[in-house]
Image 1: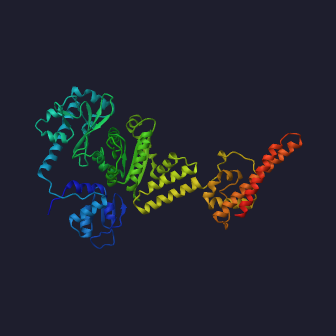
Image 2: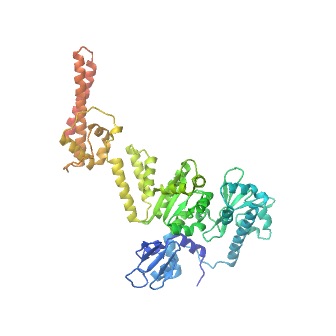
Image 3: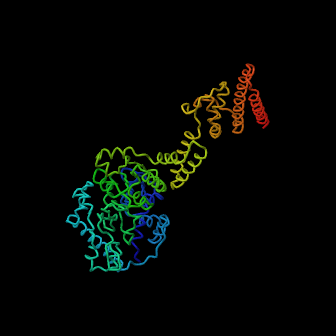
Length: 538
């Protein structure tokens, strides 16, 4: 049997949730931390088949079957390993690689990378507590890091000289450069990180695969990260995930913040389920990893424009990953602060209040539509509706997508298109009242045909009618309903013109020269009567 590339199978396991894979064949119900269903491998009436999304395995307490997504497809569909991999690759949207035995040289090379990264981290940690690292140590302590936190997260200091290039002279230069730690210049090898506060970046298994260095002299950018390597892909790596993984399982959620210092401080002050992207916007791979651990996510960003933009992007990316068990929320730290500053000034209690005040995804998307478009105009509302539909169309669960569509359709009707008179915003116009029959007819039309109410909202506002009152059902189609409203509008318009003409006539009899104004009114009345005749003839 050929050997298969573990990198590819590991990527499949990261991309695909075992709940989704098993759920295609077995109806699952979440109970506690696990999902349960009837075992597909033996007959049973009481569910004993357990699926753990966090750890990525299933286990039947009845027959003892146990495995991951690959073994499940193999056993449930009675196919070989390669067929199962091919099917899962199609689900994950990945191209099948050409399977070949992993060369011994590659295995040795990767092991060398891990040794270089770990060795460099040891050097950086030691230098942080030596005289050359005093500025970095003062800075990190000023940011609230204790010695215990420094040791746990293996924080260190990269000096101004080429210490890594000099310390690893016995390592192949190609391997040293392949880690991203060193580069080759005109005068030989030199360190990529110099005079930086160093944060090691771990993969999900706790191995160091890269570093993030913070500038200490106030220059920009504040952080520089290892460039992508064989071991490290920034868009697929989440800072702090190795520390947060078990906590995410226990807390039944993850919290996403913007930077690594925020993530560390959150983890150490009551929110161990916190993680952060690495100096880049969230990606589909980040969300996929988080959803595999738990589909409940709180995005906690700064309240400034950049934070709002990051939240909007997160909302867009997370839509395809939504399930009926998902609880996605958005929290914002206002006042120009970040989570680190909130924890320093107000402690865990203040941060907890921000988390508790988070907005659910449904309301957050609705708020985006209302603030991003001028929903007081028909054109703005049209744009906002298209925006919402574009987002909800990304939900892959058709039943959940239908629920979201229904929710937003109701909101659109009730808050945008079901016209209601807001007396405090409408200028008072002295207009003749309407009789009870007219009132009930108008109420019926407004509630039955919200598009008509929208088109003639300004006029309807002048009728002093409470449109929340009940009205009997009437046999009026949409065309007749609009004709009725237009007719009523013309009648009111002509009544106003006639009233103005009476006032001018009285002034004429009193000796004022207003004949030209009366002539203009006569022309307007005549035009309105022609429109009324034309309307009646339709």
